[in-house]
Length: 273
Image (cartoon, rainbow, N blue to C red; front, side):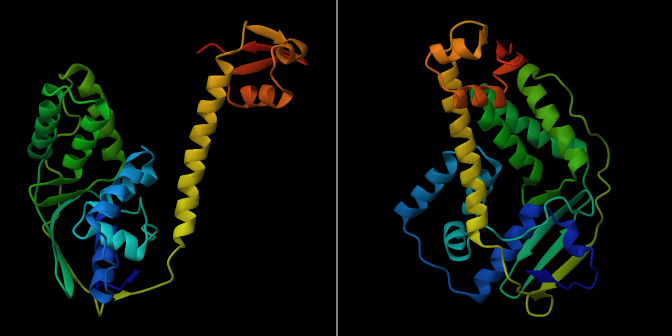
């Protein structure tokens, strides 16, 4: 989807998730949504939740939008959204209507915003939740709180993510960012008829192929590590590995995956980890 706002930078005020949400909302106003039963919706979420890859987690997040399952099934998961092209740090409210979307900038300080992130993490830590759950909760609070959204550039995002993992360990590390965010009190609207145009979308097969490649690579790694666990000794010749029942293909795979390294022709040693 292309946007033709009065200020070409307006759309770059929004983070990639909010740009995607806007595009799905516009499409849902123009085309009917496919009905998705409760059972099918549950199966879709279970499918995405089986993997912690970025692609699968992005699908799962989109399913949780209003009519999210229907939007995913109707329009696919492969809408093109620039992921790192953002104007800067911006706190704002969003109002999505039938014919337009309006975004309004809100002044904000890191001290105010960080309190909610830390509170959410403290609650999860008190309940002894697993690390993945705590991190997911913290990231949700980073991007959305009490009807306000936050566009976070990579520099600030990396600093907060690093802090999240450290805070999980010690519960004492102070939040890394302070002061006024410099969020502009700026309002802009996008008229869906005047300011947008549809363009050809990437085939969902490409996104699925990327997901399948990630899954197959992970499965292959697990199989290799399981097989390598049966190797006896720490140094071998090719003949000794073959004598243990491994093939030359296995040896190449062990080396490719960093489990062994070649000392010189026909001689290998275990890689310490």
